Amino acid sequence: MKTLITILALLCLHLPAMADSDIDGRTVSFTQFINEMAKCSRYTTFENVKIRYIMPEDKTGMDGRFNGGAGEFYISSSIRLVNCDFDVDYWLVLRNITFMDYFAIANSSPLKAIFKECTFKKTLRVYNCGVDFIDLDSCRLEHGFKFFRNTVKDRLTFKNSYVTVNPSLFGDTDAFDMEPRLFRLSNKQDGFDLVIQNTIFDLPENLRSDPQFFIILTESDFKNLSFTQNTVNANLDLSESTINNAFVTNECRFAGSIILDAFNVNPINTRVQWSTVAHNKIAIFDHKNKVTYNGYSVDSIGNEVRFSSLISCYANFYNAFKSQGNRIAANACYVEWKDIETAYLKQLYTSGQDKSVFFNYLMNVFLKTFCDYGTNPLKAIQIAFYVLLFFAGIYFFFPYSILSFHKRTMFDQLKIYGHYLSSPKSLLEIEDSVIAKEVKTPTYNEYMSFVTESKGRVPWYFNIFGKPLYFLELIRNKPTKLFYKLIDIFPDEWETMSSAKKVIATIMYGVVFIATVLWFFLIHVLDSVALSLNVFSTLGFGQIPIKGIPRYLTILEGFIGWFLLSIFSVSLISQVIQ
Image (tube, rainbow, N blue to C red; front, side):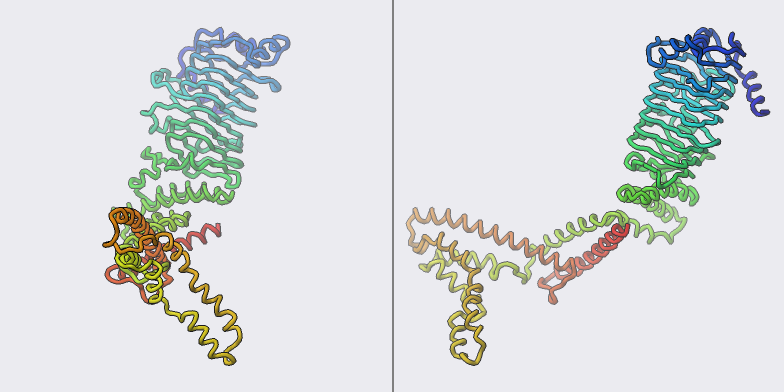
Protein backbone atom coordinates (compact mmCIF):
# COMPACT_ATOMS: atom_id res chain seq x y z
CA MET A 1 0.00 0.00 0.00
CA LYS A 2 2.83 2.40 0.77
CA THR A 3 4.31 1.68 -2.63
CA LEU A 4 0.99 2.42 -4.30
CA ILE A 5 0.65 5.71 -2.44
CA THR A 6 4.19 6.66 -3.45
CA ILE A 7 3.48 5.91 -7.10
CA LEU A 8 0.31 7.96 -7.07
CA ALA A 9 2.09 10.83 -5.39
CA LEU A 10 4.80 10.79 -8.00
CA LEU A 11 2.18 10.70 -10.70
CA CYS A 12 0.60 13.78 -9.24
CA LEU A 13 3.93 15.57 -9.15
CA HIS A 14 4.96 14.68 -12.67
CA LEU A 15 1.74 14.71 -14.65
CA PRO A 16 0.70 17.93 -16.38
CA ALA A 17 -2.41 19.75 -15.25
CA MET A 18 -5.39 17.43 -15.39
CA ALA A 19 -9.06 17.43 -14.57
CA ASP A 20 -11.11 15.09 -12.50
CA SER A 21 -14.01 13.58 -14.39
CA ASP A 22 -17.61 14.49 -13.71
CA ILE A 23 -18.43 10.89 -12.81
CA ASP A 24 -15.77 10.28 -10.13
CA GLY A 25 -17.16 8.20 -7.29
CA ARG A 26 -20.37 7.43 -9.18
CA THR A 27 -21.89 4.31 -10.72
CA VAL A 28 -22.39 4.59 -14.48
CA SER A 29 -23.19 2.36 -17.41
CA PHE A 30 -20.56 1.20 -19.89
CA THR A 31 -22.14 3.39 -22.55
CA GLN A 32 -22.08 6.49 -20.36
CA PHE A 33 -18.50 5.76 -19.35
CA ILE A 34 -17.35 5.67 -22.98
CA ASN A 35 -19.31 8.81 -23.81
CA GLU A 36 -17.71 10.63 -20.86
CA MET A 37 -14.22 9.75 -22.16
CA ALA A 38 -15.15 11.06 -25.60
CA LYS A 39 -16.33 14.37 -24.09
CA CYS A 40 -12.98 15.12 -22.41
CA SER A 41 -11.15 18.14 -23.76
CA ARG A 42 -8.02 17.85 -21.65
CA TYR A 43 -6.03 15.31 -19.67
CA THR A 44 -8.61 13.65 -17.44
CA THR A 45 -8.48 11.12 -14.62
CA PHE A 46 -11.46 8.86 -13.96
CA GLU A 47 -11.16 7.79 -10.33
CA ASN A 48 -13.28 5.50 -8.16
CA VAL A 49 -15.84 5.09 -10.90
CA LYS A 50 -18.06 2.00 -10.83
CA ILE A 51 -18.87 0.78 -14.33
CA ARG A 52 -21.88 -1.53 -14.56
CA TYR A 53 -23.97 -3.06 -17.31
CA ILE A 54 -27.30 -1.20 -17.10
CA MET A 55 -30.32 -2.19 -19.09
CA PRO A 56 -31.63 -0.96 -21.48
CA GLU A 57 -28.93 1.65 -22.11
CA ASP A 58 -26.08 -0.87 -22.55
CA LYS A 59 -28.28 -3.29 -24.41
CA THR A 60 -28.34 -0.79 -27.25
CA GLY A 61 -24.96 0.89 -26.80
CA MET A 62 -22.61 -1.93 -25.81
CA ASP A 63 -24.26 -4.70 -27.80
CA GLY A 64 -24.17 -2.49 -30.86
CA ARG A 65 -20.51 -1.75 -30.29
CA PHE A 66 -19.73 -5.41 -29.64
CA ASN A 67 -21.42 -6.44 -32.90
CA GLY A 68 -19.73 -3.68 -34.89
CA GLY A 69 -22.79 -1.55 -35.44
CA ALA A 70 -21.65 1.56 -33.55
CA GLY A 71 -19.88 4.38 -35.35
CA GLU A 72 -16.24 5.35 -34.95
CA PHE A 73 -15.31 7.22 -31.77
CA TYR A 74 -12.48 9.71 -31.30
CA ILE A 75 -11.12 10.34 -27.81
CA SER A 76 -8.92 13.38 -28.18
CA SER A 77 -7.50 13.83 -24.68
CA SER A 78 -5.22 11.80 -22.45
CA ILE A 79 -7.26 9.43 -20.28
CA ARG A 80 -6.27 7.73 -17.05
CA LEU A 81 -8.46 5.28 -15.14
CA VAL A 82 -7.58 4.93 -11.44
CA ASN A 83 -9.27 2.63 -8.91
CA CYS A 84 -12.16 1.97 -11.23
CA ASP A 85 -14.48 -0.93 -10.43
CA PHE A 86 -15.83 -2.90 -13.41
CA ASP A 87 -18.84 -5.18 -13.63
CA VAL A 88 -17.94 -8.75 -12.63
CA ASP A 89 -20.15 -10.31 -15.32
CA TYR A 90 -19.88 -8.03 -18.35
CA TRP A 91 -17.02 -6.96 -20.51
CA LEU A 92 -15.67 -3.55 -21.39
CA VAL A 93 -15.87 -3.50 -25.20
CA LEU A 94 -13.96 -0.70 -26.89
CA ARG A 95 -14.43 -1.11 -30.62
CA ASN A 96 -13.63 1.18 -33.49
CA ILE A 97 -12.25 3.86 -31.19
CA THR A 98 -9.25 6.09 -31.88
CA PHE A 99 -7.34 7.33 -28.83
CA MET A 100 -5.52 10.45 -29.93
CA ASP A 101 -3.50 10.80 -26.71
CA TYR A 102 -2.18 8.63 -23.85
CA PHE A 103 -4.46 6.00 -22.37
CA ALA A 104 -3.64 4.34 -19.03
CA ILE A 105 -5.49 2.02 -16.66
CA ALA A 106 -4.19 1.70 -13.08
CA ASN A 107 -5.33 -0.07 -9.90
CA SER A 108 -8.61 -1.14 -11.45
CA SER A 109 -10.43 -4.48 -11.36
CA PRO A 110 -11.88 -6.86 -12.35
CA LEU A 111 -10.77 -5.86 -15.85
CA LYS A 112 -12.36 -7.87 -18.67
CA ALA A 113 -11.67 -5.81 -21.78
CA ILE A 114 -11.90 -6.28 -25.53
CA PHE A 115 -10.17 -3.73 -27.75
CA LYS A 116 -11.16 -4.35 -31.34
CA GLU A 117 -10.23 -2.21 -34.36
CA CYS A 118 -8.90 0.47 -32.04
CA THR A 119 -6.05 2.87 -32.72
CA PHE A 120 -3.79 4.26 -30.01
CA LYS A 121 -1.88 7.23 -31.35
CA LYS A 122 0.16 7.39 -28.18
CA THR A 123 1.08 4.98 -25.39
CA LEU A 124 -1.25 2.34 -23.95
CA ARG A 125 -0.40 1.46 -20.33
CA VAL A 126 -1.98 -1.06 -17.92
CA TYR A 127 -0.46 -1.39 -14.47
CA ASN A 128 -1.35 -2.62 -10.96
CA CYS A 129 -4.71 -3.96 -12.14
CA GLY A 130 -6.67 -7.10 -11.39
CA VAL A 131 -7.23 -8.53 -14.85
CA ASP A 132 -9.44 -11.41 -15.88
CA PHE A 133 -8.53 -11.05 -19.55
CA ILE A 134 -7.63 -8.40 -22.11
CA ASP A 135 -8.00 -9.08 -25.84
CA LEU A 136 -6.64 -6.74 -28.48
CA ASP A 137 -7.79 -7.63 -31.97
CA SER A 138 -7.00 -5.70 -35.17
CA CYS A 139 -5.61 -2.78 -33.19
CA ARG A 140 -2.89 -0.25 -33.99
CA LEU A 141 -0.56 0.77 -31.16
CA GLU A 142 1.43 3.58 -32.69
CA HIS A 143 3.55 4.46 -29.67
CA GLY A 144 4.05 1.22 -27.81
CA PHE A 145 2.48 -0.82 -25.02
CA LYS A 146 3.31 -1.45 -21.39
CA PHE A 147 1.74 -4.03 -19.11
CA PHE A 148 3.26 -3.94 -15.65
CA ARG A 149 2.61 -5.42 -12.17
CA ASN A 150 -0.85 -6.74 -12.99
CA THR A 151 -2.52 -9.84 -11.64
CA VAL A 152 -4.05 -11.88 -14.46
CA LYS A 153 -6.46 -14.74 -13.94
CA ASP A 154 -6.83 -15.86 -17.53
CA ARG A 155 -5.07 -14.36 -20.54
CA LEU A 156 -3.67 -11.46 -22.49
CA THR A 157 -4.15 -11.68 -26.26
CA PHE A 158 -2.84 -9.72 -29.24
CA LYS A 159 -4.15 -10.70 -32.68
CA ASN A 160 -3.94 -9.12 -36.14
CA SER A 161 -2.43 -5.98 -34.65
CA TYR A 162 0.33 -3.48 -35.40
CA VAL A 163 2.79 -2.16 -32.80
CA THR A 164 5.39 0.56 -33.32
CA VAL A 165 6.85 3.68 -31.70
CA ASN A 166 6.79 7.24 -32.97
CA PRO A 167 10.20 8.97 -32.57
CA SER A 168 8.55 12.37 -33.00
CA LEU A 169 6.80 11.82 -29.65
CA PHE A 170 9.99 11.22 -27.68
CA GLY A 171 10.00 13.76 -24.86
CA ASP A 172 6.34 14.56 -25.47
CA THR A 173 5.57 13.94 -21.79
CA ASP A 174 7.53 13.89 -18.57
CA ALA A 175 4.82 11.86 -16.83
CA PHE A 176 6.05 9.21 -14.43
CA ASP A 177 6.63 5.80 -16.05
CA MET A 178 5.60 7.08 -19.48
CA GLU A 179 8.97 6.72 -21.19
CA PRO A 180 8.65 5.36 -24.76
CA ARG A 181 8.59 1.57 -25.10
CA LEU A 182 7.79 -0.72 -28.00
CA PHE A 183 6.34 -3.58 -25.97
CA ARG A 184 6.99 -4.14 -22.26
CA LEU A 185 5.29 -6.91 -20.34
CA SER A 186 6.31 -7.98 -16.86
CA ASN A 187 4.56 -10.58 -14.77
CA LYS A 188 6.02 -11.82 -11.49
CA GLN A 189 2.68 -12.95 -10.14
CA ASP A 190 0.91 -16.21 -10.91
CA GLY A 191 1.40 -17.34 -14.49
CA PHE A 192 -1.17 -16.59 -17.18
CA ASP A 193 -1.63 -17.29 -20.90
CA LEU A 194 -0.08 -14.88 -23.38
CA VAL A 195 -1.07 -15.13 -27.06
CA ILE A 196 0.54 -12.93 -29.70
CA GLN A 197 -0.62 -13.88 -33.18
CA ASN A 198 -0.38 -12.36 -36.65
CA THR A 199 0.97 -9.12 -35.21
CA ILE A 200 3.53 -6.79 -36.77
CA PHE A 201 6.18 -5.23 -34.54
CA ASP A 202 7.66 -2.47 -36.66
CA LEU A 203 10.54 -0.61 -35.05
CA PRO A 204 12.66 2.02 -36.86
CA GLU A 205 15.99 0.42 -37.70
CA ASN A 206 18.06 3.01 -35.84
CA LEU A 207 16.35 2.00 -32.55
CA ARG A 208 16.70 -1.79 -32.82
CA SER A 209 19.93 -2.04 -30.84
CA ASP A 210 18.51 0.00 -27.94
CA PRO A 211 17.27 -2.39 -25.19
CA GLN A 212 14.56 0.10 -24.26
CA PHE A 213 12.83 -0.79 -27.54
CA PHE A 214 13.10 -4.57 -27.36
CA ILE A 215 9.94 -6.65 -27.16
CA ILE A 216 10.48 -7.22 -23.45
CA LEU A 217 8.96 -10.34 -21.89
CA THR A 218 11.74 -10.79 -19.36
CA GLU A 219 11.67 -12.06 -15.78
CA SER A 220 8.08 -13.22 -16.18
CA ASP A 221 6.07 -16.30 -15.44
CA PHE A 222 3.59 -17.69 -17.99
CA LYS A 223 1.34 -20.72 -18.08
CA ASN A 224 1.37 -20.82 -21.86
CA LEU A 225 3.04 -18.54 -24.38
CA SER A 226 1.99 -18.65 -28.02
CA PHE A 227 3.96 -16.44 -30.43
CA THR A 228 2.84 -17.30 -33.95
CA GLN A 229 2.60 -15.81 -37.46
CA ASN A 230 4.20 -12.55 -36.38
CA THR A 231 6.48 -10.17 -38.25
CA VAL A 232 9.11 -8.99 -35.79
CA ASN A 233 11.34 -6.12 -36.85
CA ALA A 234 12.84 -5.81 -33.37
CA ASN A 235 14.71 -7.89 -30.82
CA LEU A 236 12.58 -10.26 -28.76
CA ASP A 237 13.81 -10.60 -25.16
CA LEU A 238 12.60 -13.65 -23.20
CA SER A 239 15.55 -13.88 -20.85
CA GLU A 240 14.94 -15.18 -17.31
CA SER A 241 11.30 -15.99 -18.07
CA THR A 242 9.57 -19.29 -17.38
CA ILE A 243 6.93 -21.11 -19.44
CA ASN A 244 5.31 -23.67 -17.17
CA ASN A 245 3.31 -25.52 -19.79
CA ALA A 246 3.42 -24.87 -23.55
CA PHE A 247 5.69 -22.56 -25.51
CA VAL A 248 4.74 -22.30 -29.18
CA THR A 249 6.32 -20.24 -31.92
CA ASN A 250 5.94 -20.84 -35.64
CA GLU A 251 5.50 -19.07 -38.96
CA CYS A 252 7.20 -15.93 -37.63
CA ARG A 253 9.62 -13.68 -39.47
CA PHE A 254 12.33 -12.41 -37.13
CA ALA A 255 14.48 -9.55 -38.38
CA GLY A 256 16.26 -9.22 -35.05
CA SER A 257 17.62 -11.49 -32.35
CA ILE A 258 15.74 -13.73 -29.92
CA ILE A 259 17.33 -13.26 -26.51
CA LEU A 260 16.96 -16.44 -24.46
CA ASP A 261 19.49 -16.19 -21.65
CA ALA A 262 18.25 -18.29 -18.68
CA PHE A 263 14.97 -18.92 -20.52
CA ASN A 264 13.16 -21.87 -18.94
CA VAL A 265 10.66 -24.02 -20.85
CA ASN A 266 8.95 -27.37 -20.53
CA PRO A 267 10.74 -29.52 -23.17
CA ILE A 268 7.81 -31.87 -23.75
CA ASN A 269 5.38 -29.03 -24.53
CA THR A 270 7.72 -26.76 -26.47
CA ARG A 271 6.78 -26.37 -30.14
CA VAL A 272 9.34 -24.33 -32.03
CA GLN A 273 9.60 -24.11 -35.81
CA TRP A 274 13.38 -24.26 -36.09
CA SER A 275 13.60 -22.68 -39.55
CA THR A 276 12.18 -19.42 -38.18
CA VAL A 277 14.71 -19.09 -35.35
CA ALA A 278 17.74 -20.56 -37.16
CA HIS A 279 20.67 -18.71 -38.73
CA ASN A 280 22.03 -17.30 -35.47
CA LYS A 281 18.90 -15.49 -34.37
CA ILE A 282 19.25 -17.02 -30.89
CA ALA A 283 21.23 -14.62 -28.70
CA ILE A 284 22.11 -13.39 -25.22
CA PHE A 285 22.28 -9.79 -24.02
CA ASP A 286 24.94 -8.18 -21.85
CA HIS A 287 22.98 -5.60 -19.86
CA LYS A 288 26.13 -4.00 -18.48
CA ASN A 289 27.63 -3.24 -21.89
CA LYS A 290 24.29 -3.22 -23.74
CA VAL A 291 25.59 -5.62 -26.38
CA THR A 292 23.79 -8.52 -28.05
CA TYR A 293 25.83 -11.67 -28.71
CA ASN A 294 24.89 -14.39 -31.18
CA GLY A 295 26.59 -16.78 -33.59
CA TYR A 296 27.67 -13.88 -35.81
CA SER A 297 29.60 -12.23 -32.97
CA VAL A 298 31.50 -15.20 -31.54
CA ASP A 299 34.80 -13.35 -32.02
CA SER A 300 33.63 -10.66 -29.59
CA ILE A 301 32.11 -12.97 -26.94
CA GLY A 302 35.41 -12.78 -25.15
CA ASN A 303 34.86 -15.02 -22.15
CA GLU A 304 33.68 -18.46 -21.18
CA VAL A 305 30.65 -17.25 -19.22
CA ARG A 306 29.00 -15.55 -22.21
CA PHE A 307 29.84 -18.49 -24.46
CA SER A 308 28.29 -20.94 -21.99
CA SER A 309 25.17 -18.79 -21.70
CA LEU A 310 24.74 -18.70 -25.47
CA ILE A 311 25.24 -22.45 -25.83
CA SER A 312 22.70 -23.12 -23.06
CA CYS A 313 20.08 -21.31 -25.16
CA TYR A 314 20.64 -23.81 -27.97
CA ALA A 315 20.63 -26.70 -25.50
CA ASN A 316 17.12 -25.66 -24.42
CA PHE A 317 15.69 -26.11 -27.90
CA TYR A 318 17.87 -29.13 -28.70
CA ASN A 319 16.60 -31.00 -25.65
CA ALA A 320 13.04 -30.03 -26.53
CA PHE A 321 13.37 -31.37 -30.08
CA LYS A 322 14.93 -34.62 -28.87
CA SER A 323 12.31 -35.19 -26.20
CA GLN A 324 9.62 -34.83 -28.88
CA GLY A 325 11.38 -37.12 -31.37
CA ASN A 326 11.93 -34.28 -33.86
CA ARG A 327 15.30 -35.53 -35.10
CA ILE A 328 15.45 -33.22 -38.14
CA ALA A 329 15.08 -30.04 -36.07
CA ALA A 330 17.36 -31.43 -33.34
CA ASN A 331 20.11 -32.10 -35.90
CA ALA A 332 19.77 -28.65 -37.45
CA CYS A 333 19.91 -27.03 -34.00
CA TYR A 334 22.94 -29.13 -33.08
CA VAL A 335 24.82 -28.16 -36.26
CA GLU A 336 24.34 -24.43 -35.55
CA TRP A 337 25.33 -25.02 -31.93
CA LYS A 338 28.54 -26.80 -33.03
CA ASP A 339 29.30 -24.07 -35.59
CA ILE A 340 29.37 -21.57 -32.74
CA GLU A 341 31.58 -23.89 -30.72
CA THR A 342 33.97 -24.26 -33.67
CA ALA A 343 34.16 -20.49 -34.13
CA TYR A 344 34.77 -20.08 -30.40
CA LEU A 345 37.60 -22.64 -30.40
CA LYS A 346 39.16 -20.88 -33.38
CA GLN A 347 38.94 -17.56 -31.56
CA LEU A 348 40.61 -19.06 -28.46
CA TYR A 349 43.43 -20.51 -30.55
CA THR A 350 44.09 -17.55 -32.87
CA SER A 351 43.95 -15.01 -30.02
CA GLY A 352 46.49 -17.02 -28.03
CA GLN A 353 44.16 -17.52 -25.05
CA ASP A 354 44.38 -21.32 -25.26
CA LYS A 355 46.65 -23.03 -27.78
CA SER A 356 45.66 -26.48 -26.51
CA VAL A 357 42.26 -26.31 -28.24
CA PHE A 358 43.78 -26.47 -31.73
CA PHE A 359 43.15 -30.19 -32.25
CA ASN A 360 39.61 -29.86 -30.89
CA TYR A 361 39.05 -27.07 -33.40
CA LEU A 362 40.59 -29.14 -36.20
CA MET A 363 38.39 -32.14 -35.36
CA ASN A 364 35.29 -29.93 -35.40
CA VAL A 365 36.27 -28.63 -38.84
CA PHE A 366 36.72 -32.20 -40.13
CA LEU A 367 33.40 -33.35 -38.69
CA LYS A 368 31.59 -30.30 -40.08
CA THR A 369 33.06 -30.85 -43.54
CA PHE A 370 32.47 -34.58 -43.81
CA CYS A 371 29.25 -35.28 -41.87
CA ASP A 372 27.84 -32.09 -40.27
CA TYR A 373 29.11 -33.13 -36.83
CA GLY A 374 27.74 -36.65 -37.17
CA THR A 375 24.19 -35.61 -38.07
CA ASN A 376 24.42 -36.29 -41.81
CA PRO A 377 26.02 -39.66 -42.72
CA LEU A 378 24.95 -39.26 -46.36
CA LYS A 379 27.25 -36.25 -46.67
CA ALA A 380 30.22 -38.56 -46.05
CA ILE A 381 28.94 -40.88 -48.80
CA GLN A 382 28.50 -37.92 -51.15
CA ILE A 383 32.08 -36.78 -50.58
CA ALA A 384 33.22 -40.41 -50.93
CA PHE A 385 31.51 -40.56 -54.33
CA TYR A 386 33.38 -37.45 -55.51
CA VAL A 387 36.69 -38.85 -54.22
CA LEU A 388 36.04 -42.17 -55.95
CA LEU A 389 35.33 -40.45 -59.29
CA PHE A 390 38.40 -38.23 -58.91
CA PHE A 391 40.76 -41.17 -58.54
CA ALA A 392 38.92 -43.11 -61.26
CA GLY A 393 39.67 -40.19 -63.60
CA ILE A 394 43.37 -40.47 -62.75
CA TYR A 395 43.41 -44.24 -63.31
CA PHE A 396 41.66 -43.80 -66.65
CA PHE A 397 44.76 -42.18 -68.18
CA PHE A 398 47.21 -44.77 -66.89
CA PRO A 399 47.59 -48.42 -67.94
CA TYR A 400 46.50 -51.20 -65.64
CA SER A 401 46.09 -54.94 -66.04
CA ILE A 402 42.46 -55.32 -64.95
CA LEU A 403 40.12 -56.16 -67.83
CA SER A 404 36.73 -56.80 -66.29
CA PHE A 405 34.61 -57.26 -69.44
CA HIS A 406 36.82 -58.09 -72.43
CA LYS A 407 39.78 -60.38 -72.86
CA ARG A 408 41.20 -58.06 -75.49
CA THR A 409 41.92 -54.35 -75.61
CA MET A 410 40.42 -51.75 -77.92
CA PHE A 411 43.56 -51.79 -80.04
CA ASP A 412 43.33 -55.58 -80.50
CA GLN A 413 39.73 -55.20 -81.65
CA LEU A 414 40.65 -52.47 -84.14
CA LYS A 415 43.46 -54.70 -85.46
CA ILE A 416 40.85 -57.36 -86.31
CA TYR A 417 38.96 -54.87 -88.50
CA GLY A 418 42.23 -53.73 -90.06
CA HIS A 419 43.27 -57.33 -90.89
CA TYR A 420 39.87 -57.95 -92.43
CA LEU A 421 40.12 -54.98 -94.82
CA SER A 422 43.73 -55.76 -95.74
CA SER A 423 43.38 -59.54 -96.30
CA PRO A 424 41.06 -61.90 -98.25
CA LYS A 425 39.92 -63.66 -95.04
CA SER A 426 36.42 -63.20 -93.67
CA LEU A 427 35.76 -61.60 -90.32
CA LEU A 428 34.68 -64.92 -88.82
CA GLU A 429 37.90 -66.60 -89.91
CA ILE A 430 39.98 -63.84 -88.35
CA GLU A 431 37.84 -63.88 -85.17
CA ASP A 432 38.15 -67.66 -84.84
CA SER A 433 41.90 -67.48 -85.18
CA VAL A 434 42.07 -64.79 -82.48
CA ILE A 435 39.74 -66.74 -80.17
CA ALA A 436 41.85 -69.84 -80.65
CA LYS A 437 44.82 -67.90 -79.33
CA GLU A 438 42.79 -66.57 -76.38
CA VAL A 439 41.19 -69.89 -75.37
CA LYS A 440 43.12 -71.58 -72.62
CA THR A 441 40.71 -74.49 -72.00
CA PRO A 442 40.66 -77.68 -74.16
CA THR A 443 38.37 -77.75 -77.19
CA TYR A 444 35.22 -79.86 -77.11
CA ASN A 445 36.74 -82.59 -79.31
CA GLU A 446 39.79 -82.90 -77.06
CA TYR A 447 37.50 -83.08 -74.05
CA MET A 448 35.29 -85.77 -75.61
CA SER A 449 38.38 -87.78 -76.64
CA PHE A 450 39.49 -87.64 -73.02
CA VAL A 451 36.10 -88.90 -71.84
CA THR A 452 36.15 -91.81 -74.43
CA GLU A 453 39.64 -92.88 -73.50
CA SER A 454 38.79 -92.65 -69.82
CA LYS A 455 35.56 -94.64 -70.14
CA GLY A 456 35.08 -96.76 -67.07
CA ARG A 457 37.72 -94.84 -65.20
CA VAL A 458 35.74 -91.62 -64.68
CA PRO A 459 32.14 -91.11 -63.46
CA TRP A 460 29.28 -91.05 -65.99
CA TYR A 461 28.42 -87.42 -65.47
CA PHE A 462 31.67 -86.26 -67.16
CA ASN A 463 30.09 -87.36 -70.48
CA ILE A 464 26.52 -86.22 -69.80
CA PHE A 465 27.44 -82.67 -68.72
CA GLY A 466 30.44 -82.21 -70.96
CA LYS A 467 28.64 -80.86 -73.97
CA PRO A 468 26.33 -78.39 -72.16
CA LEU A 469 29.20 -77.00 -70.10
CA TYR A 470 31.37 -76.49 -73.13
CA PHE A 471 28.47 -74.89 -74.96
CA LEU A 472 28.15 -72.32 -72.16
CA GLU A 473 31.83 -71.58 -72.53
CA LEU A 474 31.38 -70.82 -76.23
CA ILE A 475 28.02 -69.08 -76.19
CA ARG A 476 29.47 -65.73 -75.07
CA ASN A 477 31.13 -65.43 -78.51
CA LYS A 478 27.82 -65.85 -80.41
CA PRO A 479 26.74 -62.14 -80.35
CA THR A 480 30.09 -61.09 -81.74
CA LYS A 481 29.89 -63.64 -84.59
CA LEU A 482 26.36 -62.57 -85.47
CA PHE A 483 27.55 -58.98 -85.65
CA TYR A 484 30.46 -59.97 -87.88
CA LYS A 485 28.09 -61.78 -90.29
CA LEU A 486 26.14 -58.53 -90.70
CA ILE A 487 29.18 -56.39 -91.59
CA ASP A 488 31.18 -59.05 -93.47
CA ILE A 489 30.21 -57.78 -96.98
CA PHE A 490 33.63 -56.86 -98.37
CA PRO A 491 35.49 -60.11 -99.19
CA ASP A 492 37.99 -58.25 -101.40
CA GLU A 493 41.17 -56.67 -100.13
CA TRP A 494 41.17 -52.90 -99.75
CA GLU A 495 43.65 -52.42 -102.58
CA THR A 496 41.53 -54.37 -105.05
CA MET A 497 38.19 -52.72 -104.19
CA SER A 498 36.51 -50.44 -106.65
CA SER A 499 36.13 -46.76 -105.82
CA ALA A 500 32.43 -47.18 -105.04
CA LYS A 501 33.11 -50.05 -102.64
CA LYS A 502 35.88 -48.07 -100.96
CA VAL A 503 33.46 -45.21 -100.29
CA ILE A 504 30.87 -47.58 -98.82
CA ALA A 505 33.51 -49.47 -96.79
CA THR A 506 34.98 -46.19 -95.52
CA ILE A 507 31.60 -44.96 -94.28
CA MET A 508 30.48 -48.29 -92.88
CA TYR A 509 33.68 -49.17 -91.08
CA GLY A 510 34.09 -45.57 -89.99
CA VAL A 511 30.84 -46.01 -88.06
CA VAL A 512 32.06 -49.38 -86.74
CA PHE A 513 35.39 -47.81 -85.80
CA ILE A 514 33.72 -44.98 -83.84
CA ALA A 515 31.26 -47.37 -82.18
CA THR A 516 34.14 -49.64 -81.15
CA VAL A 517 36.09 -46.73 -79.69
CA LEU A 518 33.03 -45.50 -77.77
CA TRP A 519 32.25 -49.02 -76.54
CA PHE A 520 35.74 -49.66 -75.27
CA PHE A 521 35.83 -46.12 -73.84
CA LEU A 522 32.73 -46.98 -71.79
CA ILE A 523 34.26 -50.27 -70.70
CA HIS A 524 37.50 -48.50 -69.78
CA VAL A 525 35.52 -46.00 -67.68
CA LEU A 526 33.77 -48.87 -65.89
CA ASP A 527 37.11 -50.59 -65.32
CA SER A 528 38.56 -47.37 -63.87
CA VAL A 529 35.58 -46.91 -61.57
CA ALA A 530 35.75 -50.56 -60.51
CA LEU A 531 39.46 -50.18 -59.73
CA SER A 532 38.83 -46.96 -57.77
CA LEU A 533 35.93 -48.51 -55.87
CA ASN A 534 38.02 -51.53 -54.99
CA VAL A 535 40.90 -49.42 -53.73
CA PHE A 536 38.59 -46.95 -51.93
CA SER A 537 36.73 -49.66 -50.08
CA THR A 538 40.09 -51.33 -49.23
CA LEU A 539 38.92 -54.70 -50.58
CA GLY A 540 42.24 -55.07 -52.37
CA PHE A 541 43.54 -57.22 -55.25
CA GLY A 542 46.54 -58.72 -53.51
CA GLN A 543 48.80 -57.26 -56.20
CA ILE A 544 47.66 -53.75 -57.18
CA PRO A 545 46.97 -53.91 -60.97
CA ILE A 546 48.47 -50.51 -61.78
CA LYS A 547 51.97 -49.15 -62.24
CA GLY A 548 53.81 -45.85 -61.92
CA ILE A 549 52.77 -42.84 -59.84
CA PRO A 550 49.10 -43.92 -59.64
CA ARG A 551 50.27 -46.96 -57.69
CA TYR A 552 51.13 -44.61 -54.81
CA LEU A 553 47.85 -42.75 -55.24
CA THR A 554 46.00 -45.98 -54.54
CA ILE A 555 47.50 -45.97 -51.05
CA LEU A 556 46.25 -42.41 -50.51
CA GLU A 557 42.80 -43.30 -51.85
CA GLY A 558 42.66 -46.35 -49.60
CA PHE A 559 43.42 -44.19 -46.55
CA ILE A 560 40.81 -41.59 -47.53
CA GLY A 561 38.30 -44.35 -48.14
CA TRP A 562 38.94 -45.89 -44.74
CA PHE A 563 38.56 -42.46 -43.11
CA LEU A 564 35.32 -41.54 -44.90
CA LEU A 565 33.71 -44.94 -44.47
CA SER A 566 34.58 -44.87 -40.77
CA ILE A 567 32.96 -41.44 -40.39
CA PHE A 568 29.92 -42.69 -42.31
CA SER A 569 29.61 -45.73 -40.05
CA VAL A 570 29.89 -43.72 -36.84
CA SER A 571 27.43 -41.07 -38.08
CA LEU A 572 24.98 -43.70 -39.22
CA ILE A 573 25.13 -45.52 -35.91
CA SER A 574 24.64 -42.22 -34.08
CA GLN A 575 21.52 -41.45 -36.10
CA VAL A 576 20.16 -44.97 -35.70
CA ILE A 577 20.61 -44.77 -31.93
CA GLN A 578 18.74 -41.46 -31.87
